[in-house]
Image (cartoon, rainbow, N blue to C red; front, side, top):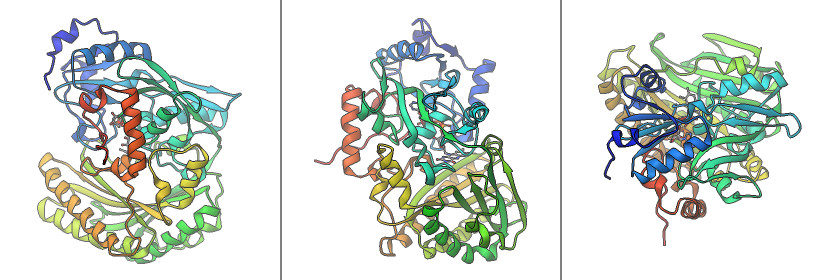
Length: 476
Ligand SMILES: Cc1cc2nc3c(=O)[nH]c(=O)nc-3n(C[C@H](O)[C@H](O)[C@H](O)COP(=O)(O)OP(=O)(O)OC[C@H]3O[C@@H](n4cnc5c(N)ncnc54)[C@H](O)[C@@H]3O)c2cc1C
């Protein structure tokens, strides 16, 4: 694809703030990407402050056949998803208005907001949204990839709670997609990524929320077989106890020089003694930190280290302790191979397990449906992710290949169990090599293709915006 040299753009009367390499603000925006793998150096960074500015500038970019990337919070892991080396990055960070409407109990959120900004504003009204757990994650990518939240068992994926989206289309038109207008566009945005337009504002349902009870238990490695069984029990029980949630992290801790199981627990109603956690509280522990807090404060708790070379892969499988235990055993092998390549202390690796009960799909359908096809799952499941975090690029290249091999082995094992492996892959946890959009199923691929043909007939978001997962071809 021919690139227009940046000076042509500089003379094009762009309305957005334009940042050039070496300018302080440019360097700050590049540095603010979460993973080092995303810190590419675009020829220019455009920072529109409104849908109107973006609309005019997008037309200019498209007319110049300029390759571009779209960035909200900059937390996605696959290389080039929201940044680009030989092209322009559209950075939505200045579109960050948040307006709560008391009457409709909805909130309008600029797509460049971070989740902690949203929680901070909504807690003034004792309300919250189904949003990111880490407050530094961006609203745009999180919602367009689905959005797995503490409130998901109760309210569906974060994207299920989008009432309307203001979208700048490839031809510069600004449309509002909601249940009555452009409903087909609204549906494909819920999990379909950056394939249809650039969202500038989301209107989200809010929920009453005051305090939450939340924290972590760190338990020794020998509890893992028991935790595998307990996790499956939890997944079964969660449908009657949807305000509870947990994440299990089996990970290598460089400071302890050992693998531990970390259990993150939450009750979003602030109940401190829900019986669903009784057995969990009896686990032997290395440390424990659980408290009553706000969703806003919780969103600042450290999750993963920033400014490293990080990759992740995902799978979904049946809620079956044998698969979870296998994931843990294979993780031991992954740790051994990472240790053979780099000094202990230079890496972290984790596999995480999150409940994926059938009830989530029911909540989605009730809210109008998304495009991810999770309702095709035949049983309660587990949303799985493996994460490798390195200090250097060379270490990362090695670890990436190891993690990829790890996921293939686990996939094979899950496949060997009847109904063990699910088709669906979760965009927000996937690696670029994983065929996320095909995993939504043929009907949903067709809907996404039809919407793309209608709203972007020239295929601008397929050809000029290479980052993220692009639409698969339709089978005849
Ligand atoms: C520390 C950490 C914690 C996380 N926790 C969770 C979690 O609890 N649950 C979960 O589901 N995920 C979680 N994630 C994953 C996260 O949801 C994804 O990485 C998501 O893509 C990040 O969104 P972003 O806006 O920050 O990313 P970006 O990198 O800015 O964007 C991601 C993708 O979305 C596109 N995009 C962004 N905004 C727009 C827009 N307005 N219009 C069109 N396209 C757009 C970009 O082009 C890119 O392809 C976490 C990630 C990190 C690093």
